[in-house]
Length: 170
Image (cartoon, rainbow, N blue to C red; front, side):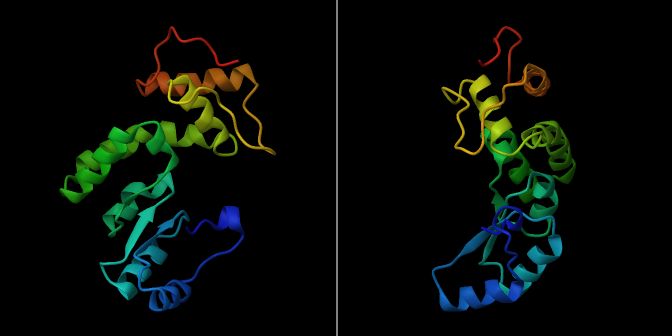
């Protein structure tokens, strides 16, 4: 899982290649960095059998277009059908449909990062009835600001994932 923003370590293409050489059971990785060059270089070096999965919402469409194997991101917890449809559209060469789905997911993707992930995600999943409570582990704490809750609820409503009659999570 390549996520330097959380680990403070950036993996190079050489490092991935060395690990793959020494660990033949390594078949892929999740890449959550705004760097399509890395994906292209890894795939060119290790071949199409090595899988690179997108872990950054904004790069879902472009990474799939350059050969990414799939998507593992936070928005998939809210709209898995739309994320799957995006992947299928790219695989089928239906780029206009893929672009439409990518744009449709954009508002949700942005909302997930209005605070440290997974705080907004857990709140939204609770609102959708997917989790019993928006609990997160310390030092993170659930959203308490009603204005932020209303903002996230509005995003869910625009995406068709929340009905207007559901009350705020305490």
